[in-house]
Length: 294
Image (tube, rainbow, N blue to C red):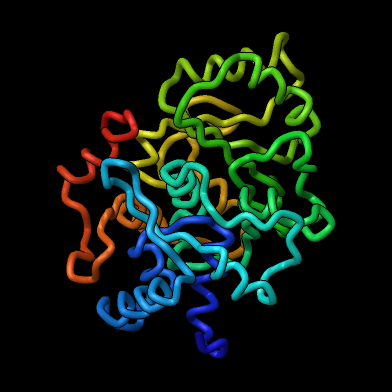
């Protein structure tokens, strides 16, 4: 690979940081100024050079691109020194949903007022390299953080995506981790049901706390509305991610951009010929495959 190819390096760095991405996500992030065919040819070249590979479920669903060991080696001088050299995704459907929620409309509208720390960074980079505000990952690793260096009300938001409810003991173990978060921090939980949200809260707090930081959003609402999905439980009830972000960054994101990333999450096609917005039937099929009824 031509190491001077800036866009190739950007794609490889993105796949290291976020672990997986659809063709549509990569196109919107790095190729929106060229044709779909040109973008696809570039991505296929990276695959041919064995720098990236395709991963999908056993049923052929949710195909994504991910970095190979060779790809990781290729960008070793382009990323922080790694304490753990892992590139593969352990659960690519979960990681893809996390990435889509984490990035939201910034997938094609980068916001310099937000610092994104991913789960990959938390598990791979020495803590001394991460922003000081990020809690230690030795006890727990959320699915990512939004950091607002100039936030007036909120400085830090953690993301937790629960595709499957865990035992109460697992949530009880998080009591001290999140108990150390200050008042001006938040945690966004994306869950399949309101019952799961109640289980999480009751496990975290045996008695009513002085304050708590946990907000809950339904996954089905996220898949429909993106960052505009309403918070149904928590200190910011009736608000949404878009409002929390815009109230804490000087670079405001337009409201009409909040739902755009959904098609990039649910687009299950790898070829440029089929790069288009999913129709309603296909969207429902993708959601149903992870047990979500829209």
